[in-house]
Figure 1 (cartoon, rainbow, N blue to C red):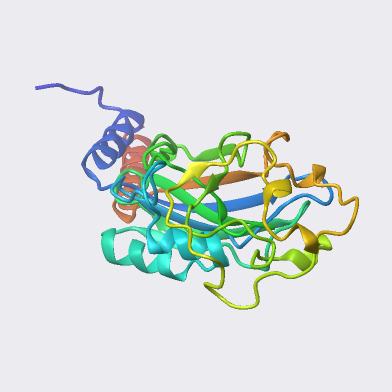
Figure 2: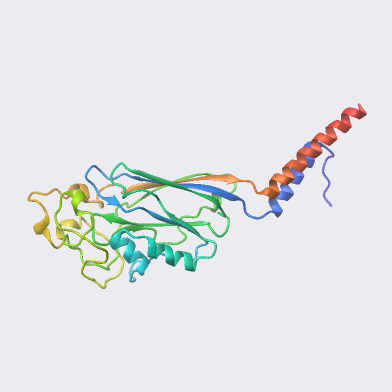
Length: 278
């Protein structure tokens, strides 16, 4: 049996250690911020959906057909179907969509999630959002367990990473690329465009990485003003569409607080006892 020196400090430390070892996972408040880093005149993104899960939620796979959740997110900027799939299939998961309108170059969107179990049910982070202007381009993480937040559960901290870097923008393969039915044309001075959900021509393809500058090859080029510069929209030649910052604050559990208070109480009692003895 291990013994400890009979001092108030070591007694309190021992009590705290027992509490940390025997308690459940700490709850964390987590703030997620998205900053659009595209150049002036560059692409925007629909409000970004984010989810925290235990690793069981795989939003999409390159080379496979997109789920209805990714299809509606990538075609219409509508995260509700993806949210429904997540909610029905991920026990203990937490999700949300960053509030505000679509984020264009320079825009910042942020929200906070309270009390997440980053050591368990909310350990992994996923995201998805439509890229505009487009028919069915999106950003997201293909690997469900690529972004692991568990190392921040105790000490907290900030995890930052770029999204939409070259080779990491996806075509859902669900709708033909055509300016007649692409979303947000008006924001870029292009005519035509989608006027209602699920409006474009069905492609029946699979999720794949967008290569090169895709926009000059879109159908409906008659809607593009003469001499139009597609350069700012070429998200494959810039460093990133945006950056996600995940700020994590560890929150001790009620049981840990109780043990800490007990330790402080012991400190006070032993200090009074020693003072009386002196």
